[in-house]
Amino acid sequence: MLLLQVQHLHKAYRAKGKATHAVQDVSLQIGAQEVLAFLGPNGAGKTTTIKMIAGLVVPDRGTVSIAGRDPHRDPQALRSVGAVLEGSRNLYWRLTPAENLEYFGVLRGLSRRVARQRARVLLDRFELSHKSTTNVQKLSRGMQQKVAIAVALIHEPPLLLLDEPTLGLDVEATQTVKRLVREIASEGRAILLTTHQLDLAEELSDRVAIINQGKIVTEQPTQTLLQQFSSAVYRVELPSLPDDRVARLIDLGALIEGTTIHIPDPTLLYPVLDILKPLPIVRLETERATLTDIFLKLTQATPEPMLVKGGVHA
Ligand SMILES: Nc1ncnc2c1ncn2[C@@H]1O[C@H](COP(=O)(O)OP(=O)(O)OP(=O)(O)O)[C@@H](O)[C@H]1O
Picture (cartoon, rainbow, N blue to C red):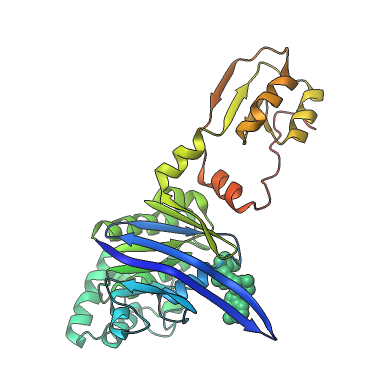
């Protein structure tokens, strides 16, 4: 069942006679139990899209359907959404986690009794019961983030929007948030996750959508995308790699790590082999692409710096 369906969304911001086409023909969908990683470089249009989904920005064109309802025509649709946007700013800092949960629960239509009851369950589940009476401003960043996610879940929405849920968190808190995201999805919810942490997106997502300059450049299952690009990346290992070859390989666009050459583009394979002739080769194989490799390729963002290890330098 599709819990979110976004079709052909467009949004331009106009100022001083100039239009910024922030979102152009964006379509997305997420089913129950699915985590969609919505990725893109700064300014690509992610926040604008999410705000249109959350009913905060009106699209110029296109439709949003949340569990079958359009939030721009039927405000009840927003009862089906929980959102943690812009860090944990959806919280009242001078209230305790329990008070925040109760307040937002009532605001979203729960009775006080039900809100309190759910608050207790969520605090227990998020291992926050011992902090239930401490003001949010005195909690650690990781705890605040957990409270923010709990607040977004108080009315048990089928769709959860999570914007950079692990920003600024340490390793342990990141692990906890990751576990919670998977658990929340497995309960039958749909999760839209934006993050600049591509390793996290690779680990957590079932599907990936990449947006660049307002347009979706790919949307498919994470594993399909990784497999598709993995056949296009090669690795060559040699017993030794002379300095003069290293410089030529780097000029060509290969990445060097010790005596291993990573070839990010299949059309470079034979030019690389020409440069290496007649050196002996230990191994030549396709390499598993990471989401970072794919993201860089599809958004043509600045490539990562050439990796030169083991004392060999261009
Ligand atoms: N309120 C606004 N008024 C005018 N232009 C805006 C407004 N909000 C966003 N933009 C512009 O729209 C484009 C898309 O911005 P958006 O915030 O949606 O990108 P993003 O992908 O969320 O970026 P980031 O990763 O940096 O948060 C950018 O060019 C941005 O400058």
